[in-house]
Image (cartoon, rainbow, N blue to C red; front, side, top):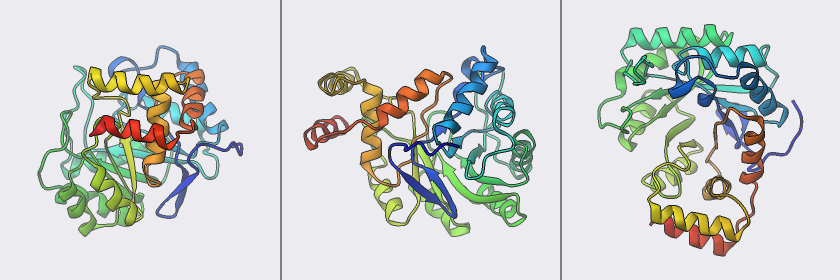
Length: 288
């Protein structure tokens, strides 16, 4: 791995140091996250480029494909360089209709953990996030049984650290009463800021927050406002959105995904964009 300086520096997940700028591998699978990629060698190349750029945080799930993305990660990067950490997710499957059926009963979770281990070629998973809720968002229900199952697997040595995804604040509190968590992965961006208070609380507790869909959910008016800031900076909306997330809080970790090497490099450059106090003031108006 190179010593390339990535925007945002690093963060510690338990005893694992990762770059705040990471890589989300979901887009490496085929259309709608089903089946193999159209460009197999291109998928391998973007994973290797991520590592060459110094990224030490790769986000994945064995549901992507299913199995395809993890098998690509293993092909491209195994044996894994020292310091590279793969974060995976369990709690949902992928069906042929493009749905994400829930799979959070103990037997399903144990199976998913072993599938991740097998397809990634690992004896222990660095971080496993429990995906809660559904495709529409978080659902207020108990996470105790499912999270307890993962805590049991952690005690068996199959998982180093735990996190939750698509979770409500109450579910996060419930999970933390069972076992420590190192990260929360929820939907959040400039326009969708329901987790503002949660992010600050997690930061105070040393827990990472990993937003997904950094440009999702914008209204036309909000999109226009973001584009105006990007134009003023001679940049792109994605670059501004990524740079804003890094500035929002030191515990925010980015996992933008792409299947193209050039786009990966553009995302890294974009996240390093310097935002002035005036830029930040204009951007903050988008979410309020």
